[in-house]
Amino acid sequence: NSTRWRVRKYTDRYGLEDCSSSELGSQTGSSCTIRSTTQYDTGVYWCESESGEKNHPVNITVHC
Image (cartoon, rainbow, N blue to C red; front, side, top):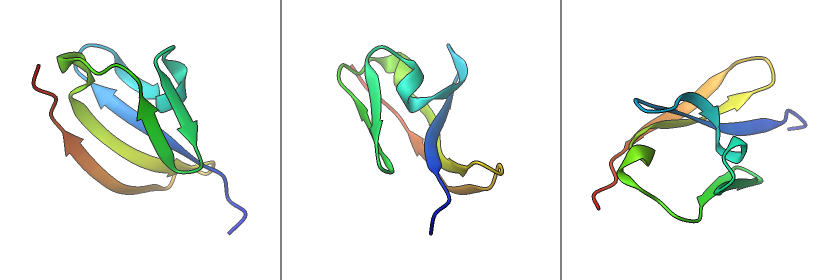
């Protein structure tokens, strides 16, 4: 549909962020790309609509 979605994440180190708010992250469509991951990227990731609806949260753990 025409609703715009953004990829958001919550990590212990940085709290709540948009995927694209980091200089190492970018969002294309519903895909979040992190160009250089560290253990600090471990957290919960999800898609969120402009109205605040959240879909499909996933836990991602990064081991370095």
